[in-house]
Image (tube, rainbow, N blue to C red; front, side, top):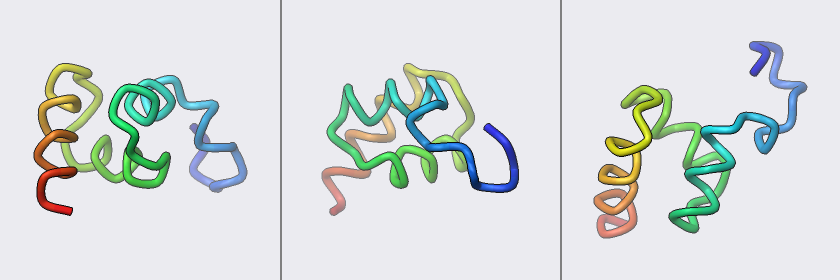
Length: 54
């Protein structure tokens, strides 16, 4: 994903994966990736916690 924020979020495969698997928005998925990296198993764990806190 480019840093100029003109690339749609759904073109980032990890954001798309996380949003589809967890029902998070692409923006929420991007936030989790920024905080925890791109390990998909870790992201899925954190997404469950994130949704539970919301």
